Image (cartoon, rainbow, N blue to C red):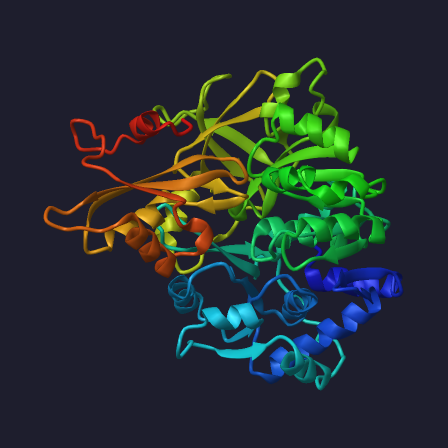
Length: 502
């Protein structure tokens, strides 16, 4: 079984001088990355970190992020990726939940740390470099168990409370198989723009590394930078959400960009769509692959391969599908009424069973029991149907999740914050179409009798308590919210009344 640590040890032995990681114009070979990560492992040990302790990173993508991730693997600690886009209140909740023994951060991350943060912290930059370089370069050679937790990534829940997804060494080892399924090898060059606190960043971002190829890392999505780096490093692979693909197609710099090296563009979070795909094929000239997965599945579990991305082919309707399960994935679609397998074409909930599935939610046994049921099946909460050939078509989301620019947003989290405002009696949030981000939250608020609040005040309240990308783009103050006879909120009726997508 490959871990991040054992993989780097092998590549450093067999491909010592090959490029491993590029960030901010500096390229590290596998031998250099091996030495740096061993120093980080010894730095952790010198700080009293032991096997199984949590080591958190609160920073934008950077080379040091990889060093901590692999360094933790080399001495048996669990890496925790933290979302630098959250608010200080949200970050405080997560830090109190995961209780890291040590936290690494950049300047942005430092702004999110609450007063009296419950852990020691080291800043990336000069402080980190001095501490790392003073540590020995000898590999601690910790041999991690397959079931040991390699990574904890936090995902929002339907109640708005963050949940730490525990991913084992065995689960993350399947990243190497995913790299092979994506056509990656030692000569591949992978541009990683998705944030490393996401499985779409950390899982996908380590795929070419696992295959012995070259990873080109950028701090965050920047279309002009992406278009300049592809020809500079002869990038062969990348993963982007459709909203970013659309940004690239609309970028003036695309006209003069040399994208001839690009072999495969993977996308996820939502289908590409016929119109956008045709534009992308014409402009980018590479293959496309749709990937469906989630944090709890350690990444991609269903793919629609390049040969099915033909708008003029025999089955153009497959562009609305996310594909078929990978060979090591068991997938069922369960009828929510009978709790049995749904018939072909009938909508049900996607259940997964795989060695990639999380071991559970950190310190949350009740949520774990709800998600992982009899015989190890994981309930995704996603609604879908399958056709006669086994292609999966996402139908809706049982949890009302909004996907905005690739970020998962749960209405309940926004509703909880709005309901905490003194003037708010009721709040409901739905996703509405957005030209750039695909979807964006829209909030509908009923005020308490005798109370007053402006739209601007309500928006300011959400911005103080939520990450910016979660805040509603639209707030409407209404007299009532549509409900049925039992008092249940009718979100489809909200969508109908206000012209949102159903």
